[in-house]
Length: 136
Image (cartoon, rainbow, N blue to C red; front, side, top):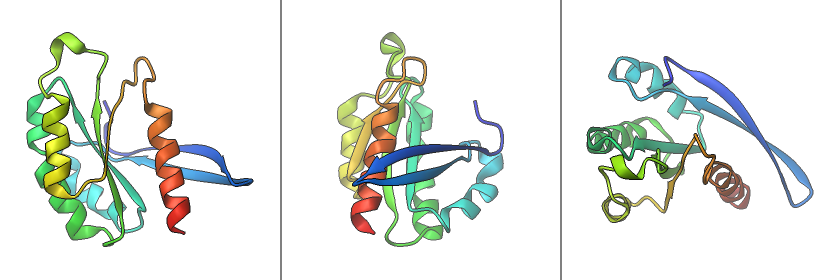
């Protein structure tokens, strides 16, 4: 679990160019909401994440999306990410429900990931890199 803000980077080669992504994990706790808003201003992509095993995290997505839209640039890319896909038995939010949220809110991309197995993690960053590269 992230406490406060964590930083990482991801490097990818696109069309013979090296692209470096700066990744800021701002946590989803309500107590860090004011800090999180600061990071939206300069962001090109936001990964709106929720825990597939906790429906309450999914139910909070609309509030977080409102914050993104209020504080980020109009051109920002938003991806919806459902984490902990490896915990099949504990799943509380199904894929169709998440995709419906995307459709209702104009979110183009939805991924399910697992930090334990690494499933789809690199694909999310690669897709974000390509989408930003195409826009520039």
